[in-house]
Image (cartoon, rainbow, N blue to C red; front, side, top):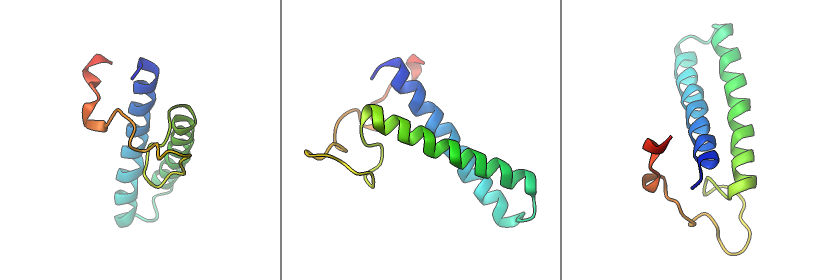
Length: 86
């Protein structure tokens, strides 16, 4: 995994964290417009990043479309990535 791929994956994980946390927050604060704007913009950015990653490096999720052969099983597995090299 090269540095560009690893950086993109980290950015995806960061956006995913914001999306998940703002969704939890909005469950108890549904009228917070600023939080909703943050959630929506992060969600949009997350999907853009995932599309970018998958177009360059292959499926990131097992729900993504794959050509033949099934590419989701290609390395690296998430637990094999050494993020200390960033």
